[in-house]
Length: 165
Image (tube, rainbow, N blue to C red):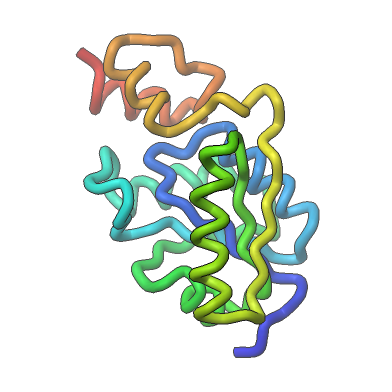
């Protein structure tokens, strides 16, 4: 399928989805006619997930329900293959810090080698979410920290049940 300039992919593990992820997805939805949030089924870099693929897809769907041009799908292929299958011309990701940039630069080069027609677009994290990570959320939840304003309410409850001590 030929790339469409109006379709973008927002990929991630989303274990769990955070308000930082949702900020990037929402901003991308204002830039593109259609945004497909790709939930990685078999994360290579992150190992086992706390939530199943189906749970993570459901959390993202619930949190993006008001965004009419956002679809959520699991995938377990190369990201560029997933983007190509969906007719996307862009992969949109958020950047928080220099460490994100270093990793994303490497991934961008590998992805462009696979398909030079698919662009990577990076959105800087909003200041209020620049510190936010899924792993940090999981650690806070494990030890009873306050995560109420960092993730959707449905995720707060699920994390307390799954990780709370």
